[in-house]
Length: 230
Image (cartoon, rainbow, N blue to C red; front, side):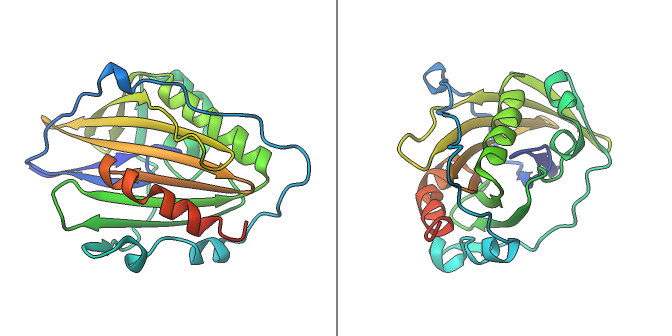
């Protein structure tokens, strides 16, 4: 059985990951737990937000990623049948953040890739641009809500998906603010693990999510391209 799981970056359905039959559950160790590195956004002079077209041009592509990556076609956004159970903090956010769409930042662009090097090898990138304070407050609020519920359930259609969330050490020294977490999704006796890292630099927010190894490999490359002139 192959189960498509709706996963999260800043919501519940920001990306889609498959649970292949050969997947095995990975349990994070206690050494992974840490508080995200955050500091208040600069309230002084802020760079103007970038347009969605400008963000689109700054997304990683197959050339940037290297051989073995294939961009996935964009899927229609559907989140009207998604319910979050057991996480009041997420429910209180309301709107797209709790039910699965994109957060309400002014501009955005997204891309998702599969990697031929192994099963369960997906990586996606999301770019958002808005005022620095808006990005900081919105991202922090959503990550706090998600990691504030160690376990909860997402019901999409008729499929219940058990989710566990755990904070990870944020990548210090990159950008102005950083958030990181590890999510485990379990359904139909199978599970997959997704790492998510969000970095804000000025008026741009970069989010890379997917297979932990691929996230670690592509994160700095994504940040450099997204903020080259920011």
